[in-house]
Image (tube, rainbow, N blue to C red; front, side, top):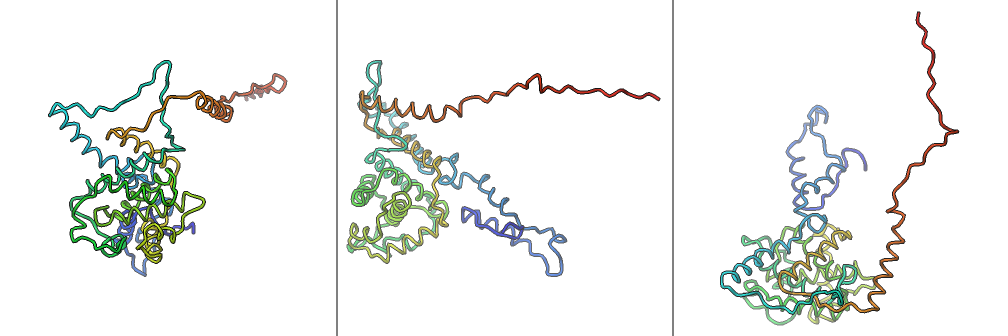
Length: 341
């Protein structure tokens, strides 16, 4: 460890293959030294900086990279607005509530405590756009996520199971059932979406009608164990999905982790980015969060939280002042007499 010959694993299979391909192209002879050939292996610190130049490949790792689901939804949103403009149909009227001098309207969803129902709706909508606007050429379909090879129920899988995209309501019912039965939180839903996009990026696969249920199930399974202190066991999911076995759940979790390269870390900045992008997705699709007037009790609570944060960070905002030196300790430069010969 620490020398120039040590190796590391990059955060993406694509990036890892690119790094190896550069190294394999230069194979020195046994008689020549590494200095003579000029083929020096990259240091571990140099390889870790590869992601800084490929941030678009890892939106689930970097807070400045745009989320995949939001970019996939932009096409449909633009087409919908264009159609409404051409047909001169005003957009659906939503009973919006606006704040005034006497009343302030706030929703009960914050980045630290999101609204469970609407967060699941937004996550289901994001998964819907992933499936609908997937790569038309088609990517590799892994067997562990294929519902035909690993069905979630004993009912016969239709022959065209991989042809028809699921509706948003169908995705929402599937996710809501798992969250309600396992009593998972809204924060877990956001982490689920982070793991889902990380899987699609690392494994270089697409989510499609043939694999979306098992991919979502694996992401929920992993997110619940990472986020919640009292995680739901794999055998508990077998009580929710009656026809699935514990061995199948264990294998799904194992391969999901391997495809993620065991990178289950979700920085707070990435979590916040996904939360606000989900809110942007909801607003673009007329899925507004419920607004309630600000009550006196909640106003006092917000004021107390604000005052607590102000006292906590007051010292950090205070500018540092340079202390002036005392006249007693002031030393002046001494000039030595010059000798002119």
